[in-house]
Amino acid sequence: MAKPDYIKAHEFSSNHRSQVASSERCGCFHCLSVFQPTEIREWIKEPQGGETAICPKCGIDSIIGSNSGFPITKQFLSAMSDYWFSSGQQEASTEVEGVRSEWDR
Image 1 (cartoon, rainbow, N blue to C red):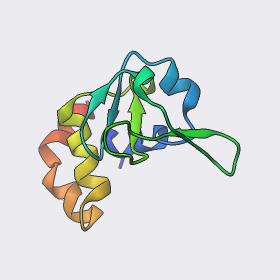
Image 2: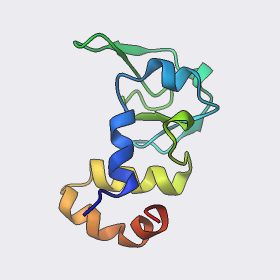
Image 3: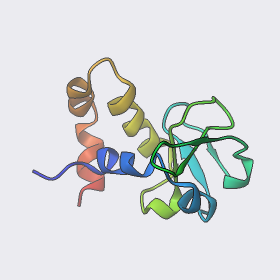
């Protein structure tokens, strides 16, 4: 069974400086803010050599850019947040079942 988009998008949330910098807009799936990449002021240097954006609104490293190919909307970011920040990822998968089918077509 294929992973839902809100799970697949997570691979674009780290080691992504060039992808984020070249995006039209970015979103944080922790605080659900949507903003321009020029608003990002802080980056984490990753051990493997890349850099990961820190959200300029909440300070968490949960950013994806529009060049990831995924929608930067409150609804999509909320589905990611429900999955990645809930008390149990298994529960969140069930909670966002309706959202999953919309993006996985």
